[in-house]
Length: 362
Ligand code: ATP
Image 1 (cartoon, rainbow, N blue to C red):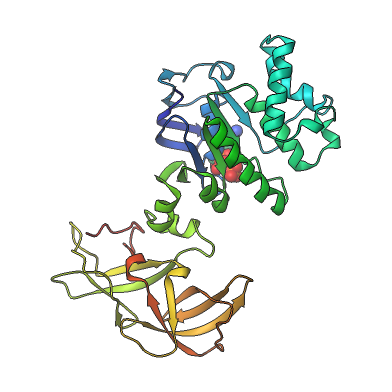
Image 2 (cartoon, protein in one colour; image 1 turned 30 degrees about the vertical axis):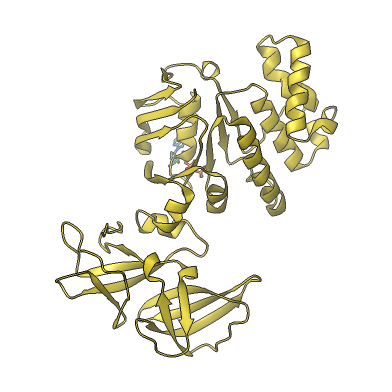
């Protein structure tokens, strides 16, 4: 069992707090993605887990064993970096078996294991080449092969696809997913690419300023972001945010946007009360566009229509707010035209404008 437990980790570099009281439990075999903007502490967290950083505070357990003070080589982990880090003067075969050789694994076993992982990564025909004779994607496969040949309990990956071109990234992303299904090593994967996170993660830990803001399955993160930051970091284009007013203080919670009361399912006011103003969070694909006023539809004005292949992106003005809506390729509307936007009531997320936190409603 290689479950991982990070308990209240803290790491500072002088005045910079890289990780602040970070805790997460990663069950055996899970693929956890650390996602967040540049500088939020993803790499530091991964390096601390690998034993490459000394923590100011906190404990790290792998498989129930406290490894906080253990050397990297004794933690049962393997790491794949963004920069491949393959040895240029060694053939692919020697790169793959390097770690096994250092551990004194007999040459026959080295060969068998190297061939196993080379088959898994479809690089068997490249074993005699030098890294300089490989494409970026092939080199990255060698780096992955070199990590998994060690049969680690835990696999750590730091932006392993970011040096690849867009098409290759897409291909390698699917490969990594397949590989994880076959190996089931507990995996922690760092990226700032939200699509990669949504595609690969069993769970995503969204980080900001050294802390985990929300840790949940991709669908929970996407559908019910814990706050405005998560809603705007995930999704392309991100979630829309509009100002709303709470109408009628008593009974169920009613929300008004640009003078229109939204047809939200009846909700109780949250414990602790509802602020007079709320932020409405709604994703671009959860808005329908009407050309006439229909009940509960919010009046808007078309600003721009952008065709992007499979669909179009409509930008509309609602009062002082800008809203992006996903519309079909055949949709047509001139800039300036009046439209009415119907928000899917089940998909509307309410947030406190002061804190950005989602308002828990029942
Ligand atoms: P990126 O996506 O850009 O790699 P990240 O989320 O991985 O960013 P970290 O590399 O973990 O972020 O850095 C977290 C914070 O710690 C940043 O403010 C960074 O400048 C700082 N930091 C990281 N390493 C060091 C170091 N060796 N010395 C000083 N500050 C550091």
